Length: 155
Image 1 (cartoon, helix red, strand yellow):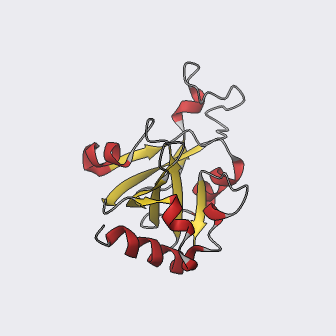
Image 2 (spheres, rainbow, N blue to C red):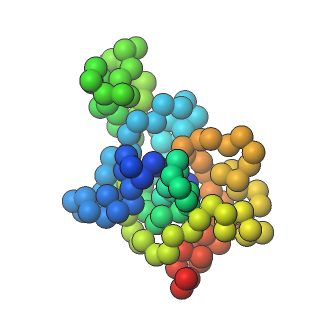
């Protein structure tokens, strides 16, 4: 089992949106970074843990715990000329971009980025490195445990 941090802008898809979805599951689409795409395509497996992170908002942070619910499949938005994620170089025979499904597991307490920066267990976390902008990044087992403990803690 692997662990991941996946960033979503809450005005596009929030953790509450996932909780409100059928079976608490939604497609993770719109990834247009090759390294993040490769994580989805080559490494992420159903059952892997996900820290669902809200980015590009007033208070960025971990909004909930989720898990990978499917293997990779072509991201349909790459084929839709009306989508902001349209890619004219993508074809159904050779898709460039992938999606996976993510299922919400537990909401817990919101863990702000500012608090994450104060945790010694997270000092090497990819998210906290200068210049890190990946929408999907690996998380170590120790980082996972530290974040989940905080998410599950009383405020």
